[in-house]
Image 1 (cartoon, rainbow, N blue to C red):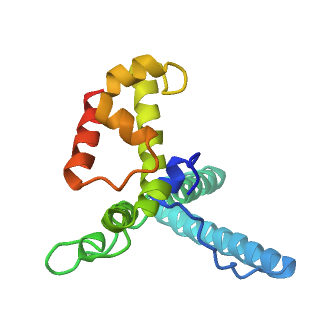
Image 2 (image 1 turned 180 degrees about the horizontal axis):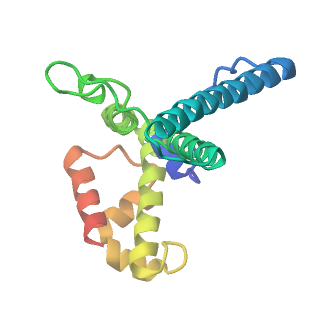
Length: 195
């Protein structure tokens, strides 16, 4: 990770390759569209016959065009609802927990786990701390300063140093030092939260 790393680097976002979908030929697409239209027209025609016959047997005279129009409108509403329906929820096991509770894919959990492992390795490897942890800590610090006070460490170093305090300021600017202890990292996070 470079010193100019982004938050995408922090959370390790990488685009996964997507398996190509099976392509339909234009003839197959036309055939499937034509069969879909024919099936819908057949359903509307059958329902029209049934509805008109049932109403006329009850001595109710109704326009066939009205019934056809109403059935087409109803079919369009059903299609629109199917088009905007919510995604399918994950299946629940017998104990009532979802897939993400059983250890399934959870991006936030994976990112946190990856950062826990990086921080654990950084305790023993100062170079890893300087390359991976320190740039992200600096980016988060600048972002917090920008959001809360309208400055960055580069735009107003004197004010930034006052707000951050000497320990965090020194940690961000002394790249050659040893990796900090856990309590030092906790104090840096506390200083960031107080901004």
